[in-house]
Length: 66
Image (tube, rainbow, N blue to C red; front, side, top):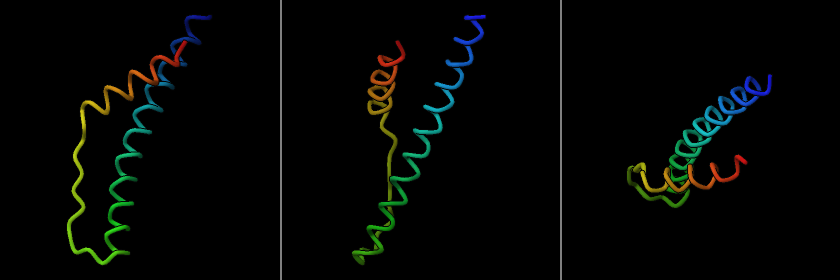
C-alpha cells in the first residue's frame, strides 16, 4: 500500500512539474506580447527555452521531494 501511494505522488509530481513549466513558458510569451502592445513596440516576441533553467528548476524542486 505505501508503494502505491509513493507512485501516485511521483506521477502527480511529474505531471504538475510539466504543466507548470509549459504554463510558465506560455505565460512568459503572453506577458511579453502584452508589454510590447502597451509600449507600442512593433517587434515579434521571441523566446527561447533554456536547458540550464530547466535543469536548475528540476534540481530545486527535486530537493523538496523529501
